[in-house]
Length: 335
Image 1 (tube, rainbow, N blue to C red):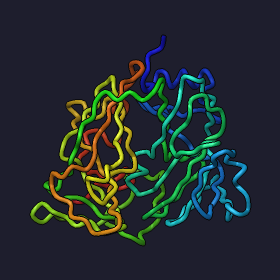
Image 2 (image 1 turned 120 degrees about the vertical axis):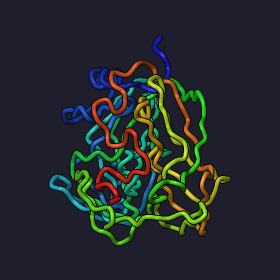
Image 3 (image 1 turned 180 degrees about the horizontal axis):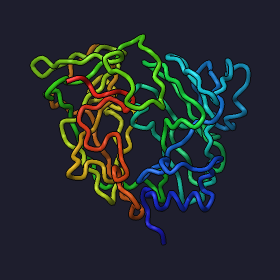
Image 4 (image 1 turned 30 degrees about the vertical axis):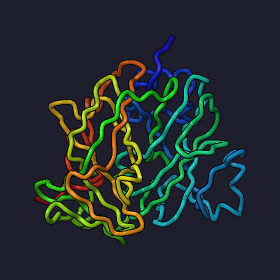
């Protein structure tokens, strides 16, 4: 009997060969991560009046003139604007057997530029969840919150994790925020900045999009509705036989959301590449004081269902060994 747990890259490859993941176009090797699979945008984006869940309907059945304001061609690239909601059919489809189900999350680079992305499937009553045995299309709901973004067909903004058997957490590890770093304690996003092309790597001057923050006496005040980047105080190490996910912020920890993108692949932070978690933080309704060492969330570890062919960072990575790190689109912060 096959082991329960999160599927590693070796089983993701077999899932493609067996037709559980239907790529639509040839799979790029970089789509297959140690314990997740990158999903690609299709050729059109529908500008919606509002977000929705299809419930008893198929997603396509809901895309009428009342919901869809207009449709955008992504084949040559197009700008998705802040404050708008878009729905993009993905290139990949699924035909899962009854023993596999899935969960989705924005990629790290997507969350760090404050692009809110969620997966929707037919008959869904919850975002970012694919039920066991699901057969059908996949859709990405995309809402840029701070920066407008240029995307195109094939852009990878979210990732899918497949699991055999029910979720089976092995352990939880709490983490807190580090406001005592050498250099900036964090970054606050500037509003009304330029467009970010999600395919341009290391090409933007971060000073055009971010302002550095100084923690006075180990404290910072978060402004409502603003977007911030911080780092965890504790290093994060994901063993070779586990995967981890940042759990959503617990309400009792404060009036803010501590992350958007939360998957950690096996091998992240393994010595000599010790690294920290980067926290994507948004304050909610009231100004909130954040203090050095304050708890902000937890990592939930799960076993893999088998060994990985390659661990995180073995073939190159933008975030292995990271400290306080903006998304891969930006050049390093000037010393």
